[in-house]
Length: 103
Image 1 (cartoon, rainbow, N blue to C red):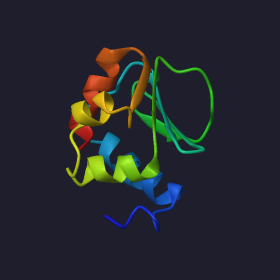
Image 2 (image 1 turned 60 degrees about the horizontal axis):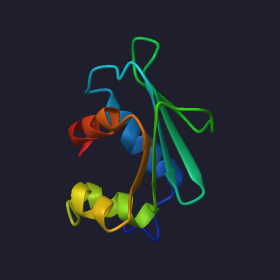
Image 3 (image 1 turned 90 degrees about the horizontal axis):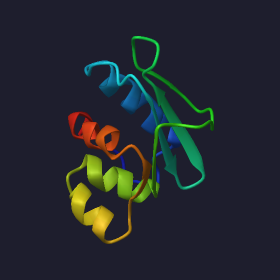
Protein backbone atom coordinates (compact mmCIF):
# COMPACT_ATOMS: atom_id res chain seq x y z
CA UNK A 1 0.00 0.00 0.00
CA UNK A 2 1.19 3.49 -0.78
CA UNK A 3 2.05 6.24 1.63
CA UNK A 4 -1.15 8.06 2.63
CA UNK A 5 0.28 11.38 1.36
CA UNK A 6 0.47 10.02 -2.18
CA UNK A 7 -2.56 7.74 -2.05
CA UNK A 8 -5.41 9.03 -4.14
CA UNK A 9 -9.06 8.40 -3.32
CA UNK A 10 -9.36 6.51 -6.64
CA UNK A 11 -6.65 4.10 -5.46
CA UNK A 12 -8.47 3.55 -2.18
CA UNK A 13 -11.79 3.00 -4.02
CA UNK A 14 -10.20 0.52 -6.44
CA UNK A 15 -8.52 -1.40 -3.63
CA UNK A 16 -11.75 -1.50 -1.62
CA UNK A 17 -13.73 -2.57 -4.71
CA UNK A 18 -11.48 -5.62 -5.03
CA UNK A 19 -11.78 -6.49 -1.33
CA UNK A 20 -15.59 -6.27 -1.22
CA UNK A 21 -15.87 -8.85 -3.99
CA UNK A 22 -14.67 -11.47 -1.50
CA UNK A 23 -17.34 -10.87 1.18
CA UNK A 24 -21.06 -11.57 1.31
CA UNK A 25 -23.34 -8.70 0.21
CA UNK A 26 -23.81 -6.39 3.17
CA UNK A 27 -27.56 -6.02 2.59
CA UNK A 28 -27.22 -2.39 3.61
CA UNK A 29 -25.39 0.78 2.65
CA UNK A 30 -22.08 1.64 4.27
CA UNK A 31 -20.45 5.03 3.71
CA UNK A 32 -16.87 6.05 4.35
CA UNK A 33 -16.06 9.72 4.64
CA UNK A 34 -12.29 9.99 4.25
CA UNK A 35 -11.40 13.62 4.75
CA UNK A 36 -13.60 15.28 2.10
CA UNK A 37 -14.03 12.18 -0.09
CA UNK A 38 -16.93 9.71 -0.06
CA UNK A 39 -16.90 5.98 -0.70
CA UNK A 40 -20.30 4.29 -0.60
CA UNK A 41 -20.62 0.51 -0.53
CA UNK A 42 -24.14 -0.41 -1.56
CA UNK A 43 -24.84 -4.02 -0.64
CA UNK A 44 -28.61 -3.83 -1.11
CA UNK A 45 -28.84 -5.30 -4.61
CA UNK A 46 -27.51 -8.81 -3.96
CA UNK A 47 -23.88 -7.77 -4.44
CA UNK A 48 -21.60 -5.10 -3.06
CA UNK A 49 -21.21 -2.11 -5.37
CA UNK A 50 -18.95 0.84 -4.76
CA UNK A 51 -19.39 4.44 -5.84
CA UNK A 52 -18.74 8.04 -4.81
CA UNK A 53 -22.34 9.13 -4.24
CA UNK A 54 -22.96 10.98 -0.99
CA UNK A 55 -26.33 9.62 0.09
CA UNK A 56 -27.93 8.30 3.25
CA UNK A 57 -26.36 5.10 4.51
CA UNK A 58 -27.15 2.63 7.29
CA UNK A 59 -23.69 3.27 8.71
CA UNK A 60 -21.23 6.11 8.13
CA UNK A 61 -17.59 5.84 9.13
CA UNK A 62 -15.65 9.08 9.31
CA UNK A 63 -11.85 9.20 9.38
CA UNK A 64 -8.86 10.68 7.61
CA UNK A 65 -7.16 8.97 4.68
CA UNK A 66 -4.12 8.67 6.92
CA UNK A 67 -6.10 6.68 9.51
CA UNK A 68 -7.63 4.48 6.78
CA UNK A 69 -4.18 3.60 5.43
CA UNK A 70 -2.85 2.89 8.93
CA UNK A 71 -5.80 0.56 9.56
CA UNK A 72 -5.14 -1.30 6.31
CA UNK A 73 -1.45 -1.68 7.22
CA UNK A 74 -2.38 -2.84 10.75
CA UNK A 75 -0.42 0.07 12.20
CA UNK A 76 -3.43 1.03 14.32
CA UNK A 77 -6.24 -1.10 15.77
CA UNK A 78 -9.86 -0.15 14.98
CA UNK A 79 -10.87 -0.07 18.64
CA UNK A 80 -7.95 2.17 19.61
CA UNK A 81 -8.64 4.48 16.66
CA UNK A 82 -12.28 4.73 17.74
CA UNK A 83 -11.43 5.36 21.40
CA UNK A 84 -8.96 8.09 20.48
CA UNK A 85 -11.44 9.80 18.16
CA UNK A 86 -9.61 9.00 14.92
CA UNK A 87 -12.68 7.07 13.73
CA UNK A 88 -16.28 8.12 14.25
CA UNK A 89 -19.13 5.72 13.49
CA UNK A 90 -22.71 6.85 12.99
CA UNK A 91 -25.57 4.40 12.58
CA UNK A 92 -25.48 0.60 12.51
CA UNK A 93 -22.47 -0.50 14.59
CA UNK A 94 -23.00 -4.15 13.61
CA UNK A 95 -22.45 -3.18 9.99
CA UNK A 96 -19.24 -1.40 10.95
CA UNK A 97 -18.03 -4.58 12.69
CA UNK A 98 -18.28 -6.47 9.40
CA UNK A 99 -15.37 -4.39 8.16
CA UNK A 100 -12.92 -6.69 9.91
CA UNK A 101 -13.37 -8.90 6.85
CA UNK A 102 -11.87 -6.16 4.66
CA UNK A 103 -8.51 -5.76 6.39
